[in-house]
Amino acid sequence: MKRLISIEFQKLWSNRACRVLIISYFVILSFIALIASVEVDIFGMHFNIAEQGIFNFPYIWHFNTYVAIWLKLFLAIVIVSMMANEYTYGTLKQNLIDGLSKQEFIKSKLLTVVLFAVASTLFIFIMTLLLGYSFSAYTEPSIVFSDLEYLLGYFVNLVAFFSFCLFVGILIKRSAFAIGFIFVWFIIEKIAEGLLWGFAVNTKEALAKITQFFPLESMSNLLVEPFTRFKAYRTIENQMNSTALVKDYDVHWQAVLIVLAWTAIFMFMSYRILKKRDL
Image (cartoon, rainbow, N blue to C red; front, side, top):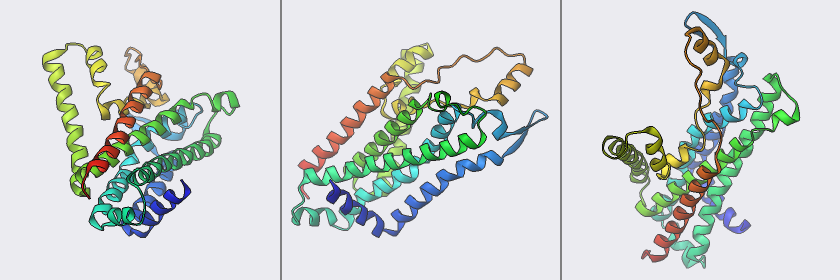
């Protein structure tokens, strides 16, 4: 395992573009801390973002993981390029000539995917603890560690999405087209959702029961938006005399299982394509 990871790390670090993207990803992740200094005016009211509860435990776990999940595109580009470069520079064929089996090759890619997800999750865990203990009004251990399921949802989301990117990279072999395909697939899911809403179902609940099995939609269902949980939203809501919004913010095991199933499918299909393809 260590040998396979070492091979992949050398390939990635020797590629300047991949190296810059990886460093940029973790640097930008750390910028979440800058949100603490943001001040805004809404409907004539002045808000300091850090004072509205977004850095309070346990809400900060939800907020940080949701914001960070949008930055995964940086590493997605790295993963797609990582696979495309194998074909472009002939390193895949050379690895096989040097004695690396196709099973070991795909295993090295999957290990890289998981390693990226683990590193990102650990980074968010540490940064969240630092921000939380700096700004949270609640620092009791029972509160601090009460919503760690959001970290699980974050990790599973990353592994699944990176596995999807790896599958697309193996399938298409060209990074630009592979990245384009990912966006096309996102659009296809939205079109399918619109067609279902227009012709097959007439309630949002029924639509959600179907679309929860779409690959990208299932991943997005792991972490729902956290913004309506904040003090600022509640203050505006009360002043507008609106009814309190009832929403489920939890990470559900059904959603986790669906995403894990797609992850297994992507990994298996990646291996099957590589095994059958004439290199």
